[in-house]
Length: 596
Image (cartoon, rainbow, N blue to C red; front, side, top):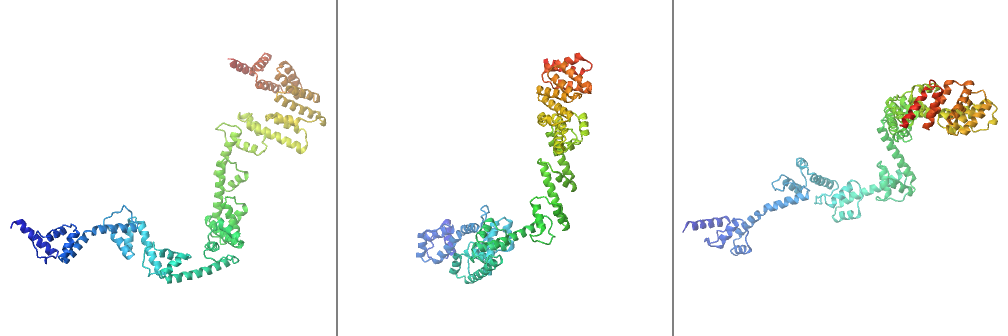
């Protein structure tokens, strides 16, 4: 027998021993049993024919061993499938390693079999960010605790998905159960749980009656635990604010006393919150009728506290509240300034009295910038004083010191003829008109008219002087009115009416130089220079200063719009007296330059 055949005999004998088939007499390697055992030993699945053959030859022990071995061959796959199932059940993230050798597998197996984990095992889940799994663990523990608490331990299912878990949670928060939930308890014979629920229901019904009495709603017939009234009364009793729809429902039911109680409690809650917010918690009285509640409510709505409010806070020894109130009001004033609002004198005084000098300075500079724009003072280096004080006075319609005005006109080109000067003249005109109304003193008429003209508002001067002179006895006053009226006509280039006024004024006061000065200026306007000189000479003879007359000539030429006429007037004066009227040369040069 060759070596190969010997080895096969030995191998077959060993396999029969291994798989307990020694009672089979045929030891030839040609036997079907040898093929079957070789396949089994290599892990190859047997066919039904082969299994039937083993049964026919009554090799039952061999069949048992083969079955166990084949079962073992599929065990790894079963382990993987079970692990995957547990991962899904306990919401483990998919990216977690699926190996059955993973430390997570025994934890999940224990959780599934024993429904509990140790603290260290829970910590391992937390450390690996398995928050959903931890939540399930906590739910399982809570479910177990609730089953113990409500005598439901005979119910075997420990899954948080069980209807019982939801029911027990509702019982634990003293919620009423639905008919469906009650029936579920009956079907599962959880009579102890039902008894606890019915005791709760009884207590809740008593609570409804108690709350209705407490909040003056006894007249309402509803005693339902699921009714709107109970829900609202529970909310009031829990110190929660009612929403509009709930208050409206109470109104519809005529429960005005209940609304009043709810509103009183809301005010009390608000008062307590205000005291905490505005550092007044040491104040003992928490009644909404307290004056402090009114003060803090004003403070919270950003309403300025008055002196009475501050005195109350001071007397109540609430210095921190006063400080908060002052800072809040100062902040409001600062916001007004930044947005371009001008503070009132009272607001500025408050800032000064409470030592907010920085905000006052900000207010002044902001206001000064706005006033510079209004009065067209474009100089960036313009000093705050005296211009700011002057413009503020003008804004308030307060008269200025005439000496200060004259000084500024002499020293500052920005003032002379600018918007500030016009505003000053306008203010003076209004003042003398008011004085006329107050005193009836008619000499205020020419004074006010003169200021209207300086304010570049000759129409106002004409309106003021449009009166019946026959009702005035004083000839000098009549003349003065006519002179200023004629000058106003001259301002609007109505030279005929201006001339009529000047001549009439001469009749009323022939010795006054003013009508003659006016007449001379009118002639110059008409380019009748020699006739104008005649009237100017008459004015000098009646007391007019030569310098004033020359200044009038200069004004006429300066304001003449026609370049040729200006040139003509300048040449006339230079021929008349080149030394006295040397200033006229500049108008010849301007005309010459324009000609080029």
